[in-house]
Picture (cartoon, rainbow, N blue to C red):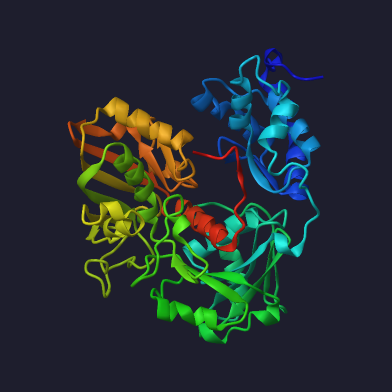
Length: 486
């Protein structure tokens, strides 16, 4: 029997029970068909019943009402009947589209509606084959490398997307493998690894959630024999920061098994700096080496993009309040950089950033319009960018915030921009955010054409998610979005 909106469960317990019935259906669609179900972009894969109920409640911020878990159950049953191929399907947006249909519109049933909306993937469910995934190698296993590993492992359960095959590091000591596994298992900022981790010391393997990850020890990027480990046509992610230009990063391409290289830092020379959501379309088959820019550039560029498109930006200054990083000293000691030799744990450290200038590589229309500086502060993660801008036309706080909130919910930059207007949030509330940046609406200041916009960002995890999006673009493993975003 079809579930109607009037049959909305009366109690929280009822909603949890329905969520429990959803879990095996969501899991089977993901593993058998490669279909990821989301609610306004929030993935339901590996969610608990409570998390599923919470995701349905979140929908009220966009649709004006909590999404009915019973209606989602009906939706998923209809979806299973279509046997869809790999895709990312937004339940909330499709249901909202169905409800918005005029009474006289055909198709009239939810099943018929979904058959039309998913016509591009309907009937394309097929058994898993080797061509459904792409190999990934992490060169370096520091803060970003380990978070990339967590994300890749978490998204690898159906075997159809990115496959983390190996990490390449310099060997520290005889306990190196144990220590690498331990650092992946426990993190002082992001908490414990969600799953199981074991090691195979004889084969130099870290096995995470059943996925064997080869640990390769090397001091020279040109001497790694990836093919001997069965690695082929892989995207190598260099997160060491040691090499930043095309010539030095090109060392990785001298090895069979590696087809493309992604740098997790701003590149030098003519390398393309890619901010996913903004300019990934400029990647061509000839671009064998690209960069994912910096965490700050990823945080501010999407917000600057939508502001420039709507209001125009004449000029501006970006001040970054940034958590300390590993390149600073815990206590005062020599450092080749100015001021960075002073204790990171005790001082605010004024330093420079190239993020403002780097924006122009992704948004050429802002070339020469932005300046920037940075202050390193004694926090371990989550930073803030303060965008001090002069616009082409005046803006009121309420209308500006409404525009930014709408961009975070409905625009093509939904995965990059988030928005919040709580009077109680502080930096630790944004640890684990997978968005590039989060606009703090209550902090917005406007005065005619002059505006100040505050953008929080998890400079580790948010950035790592942007990096993974670029890897998918390079490897051709991006899932089609249904419905497509504007």
